[in-house]
Image (cartoon, rainbow, N blue to C red; front, top):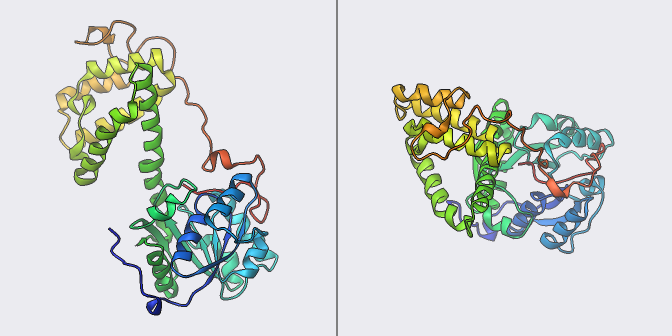
Length: 353
């Protein structure tokens, strides 16, 4: 539950006009949340058809204009473009005189703190980095999910109260992140959230391949319990063949993946090695069992068909090297329209995570 209930109107800070540069999954949701707190969205920019649709759904009647016009109309500007486009966007806006002194300029990138906004800060803008630790769908459900969501916040000392107030008004919880820690902070979230989606999607595919009719229903309770246990107990929640040191079972897994899903082998091995390291370090994996297990993970184990309950067939030294994983979509995925951003960030917009 959100520890910060909505404030009464008389207790709220001055209302601001709000603009969004980059109508990806994040920007319209944050602007809609700020609108619920009494602020007034006045302008949004977007290029792709998906961006235009999102803006129309979440910010109806808010005009779609150029990035420079967004800054001309708004007192608080949300820069919600991909990480790699942010620096160029800020520089372009500052160089063309679009930034106004006293204007709150907020970016939502997890990777960057406020230094990326330096060109705009020199032009008189007030810089804030407010990164919601949440995955976004680009729909109205995102506004509801912001309740209780943690935000990674970086701000100059004199703007900390303003940053905190904005996060709380959106229903979030501020977590202060030092400028130098932003890349590591973002890496932590990517490991936990982005990689989780990949692992779950792989698991769903494999269950479908073996004939499970409702893999989501099968995985739901298991993954929910695993996540809850991990959040409560950390490494002590580790279970399964790697933590137990069941080298034969792991060898059978690798052999079957090589035959049926070779694109998943590299990921399985990497995660199993990381799991083994953590299980060893925390005393869960017995050292006397670790040698055979690590041999399997290094590809030097005997044929897995000798292991109890394992299917016959080639072992880890079986056919072919690990197949490389397929290249996936970038952070904006299907929203990309094939054009790179220009100096104003015109081009693919979307959420940064």
